[in-house]
Amino acid sequence: MLWLERIRALDGAKIFRYDKSKEVNVMEEDLYFMDEALRLAAEAADLKGGEVLMDLYCGTGTIGLSMAGKAGKLCGVEIVASAVDCARENAARNGIDNAEFF
Image (cartoon, rainbow, N blue to C red; front, side, top):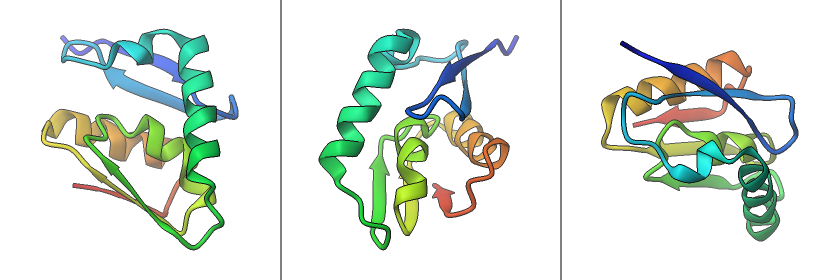
């Protein structure tokens, strides 16, 4: 049975889902820590708007999608097919059209 849980992203406006029946990053279960980690990642990336953001081992796309609005394009790469499906759903649910997941 597929059990989905919502988590918040950096700006609190985006809603992301991930499949808890599969392995997930423990970080995604601690919302406070996740918000802080996303803030620090965005700060370190220092995106200006024209970059191609590569999210390797992207899982359900949470980190990359939280920064997609500040990048020219997001390319997420993940080996787990169900996570790629969730990443695509997360992009669509949040109106993010500059993201591709492989």
